[in-house]
Length: 355
Image (cartoon, rainbow, N blue to C red):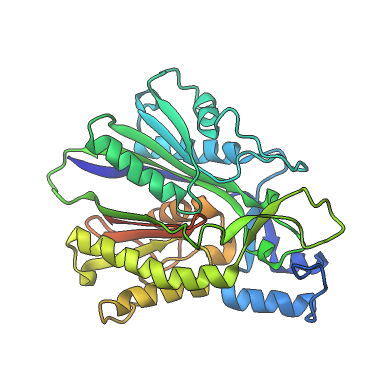
């Protein structure tokens, strides 16, 4: 029995925030002091490192669970499944529903239950739960669905990654320019097709928390005049960069080794859209572990226009590539691809998949 993706869908908000829009922001150091560089220089440096030129923000009346519902509807339609037959709805996020203009996260009831409610699913045996796993959350949800199906306790699962990071950023922190909103969803099903190696072939997951647990954290605004009790997403960018370059390629190699697939047969790598330079360096180091040069076009990207939407980046990118919406990128039936992600926790995961 194979475990395959049978449907994909994504929701990309229509509100575009360009780099030029950040000229109105006053960026400050951690201690509240102003930068020596002006905002124009900061933005240019940011673009050269991250590759991000614009990002998407949710409309004021939408929350993360709304975006998730929109993406889920598309994935269900794409797979042509009856929602009542879903055994699990696994919803990866990190910050719950944060309404525009508020500072409080809302996670009761669970966001997965909210999506199930919006889908009007009556079946109580369709179990809906949230997964908090940092940016690798959607991919970990895929791994959990794979385990459920292989164990014989599920046949069809809906896995969602959705986030509205624009609601939890500190506008006085340069890192706020990275983050965006969006949602991606997949249907994963048991399959008895003739190809013994189709679908998920191998997976790898690791948590580094001894020294690394707080590389991403909740902290106060860089603006010392704002409420010190209000928390925003914060990160130690240099530490994350070094951590990712050291550990993600090794996890990817371990996963590929488990799969038994030759690196020469790997057609695409769908990596979490965190930072263009970092992602390129991770993939380059991965290939160097096999004494190989990085093949041209191996790594599709949409970060340039969509930014970093955390758990939503990989399912959104995968959906766009399979639907021919990323220039010069496509995958064909039988292609071996890899998914890989890194994020808060610090968590890393990877999956080898035959399309």
